[in-house]
Amino acid sequence: MLIDLDPPRGFGDLAIGMPIEEAEQILREIPGFMPPRVGEVRNKGFAHYDSELSISLGFDSRGAVNAIELFRPGGDVQVTFRGLSLFGEPADVVIARLAEMFPLEIEDEGLNVTAPDVFIGLWRSVTPEDSGGEEGHFFESVLIAAPGYGA
Image (cartoon, rainbow, N blue to C red):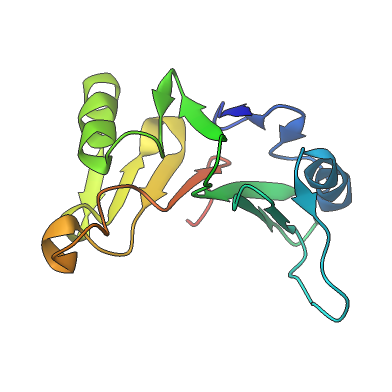
């Protein structure tokens, strides 16, 4: 499955600005959706999939989606932005390729990378230097947001 991000619009039928209830319905229709187990409580706007992909929606006080965060999938799910595989390529490659296209803000030695001009941010919990192992070579989540989100 391919998820091609189009910030700040969204991806596929999931659009920033749509009502959270409508967005949750779209999340349930994405292939591999795993409904909550009996007794499991999930936050509003959160969905998990059999590919290990998780999607979390942010929403404002009116109930309109203002951010979409995708967490690194396993399996055969590709998350791309302008032809760049955000989770398939090492974080250093993603940073270099994005820097060729847009000004970047790099914080915490590369844990947080944002391209404010296109409303996209990437995150990882550690860098390879900090982990001393395999962790940190890839981003763990990507967030696309509406203009003004987090301000």
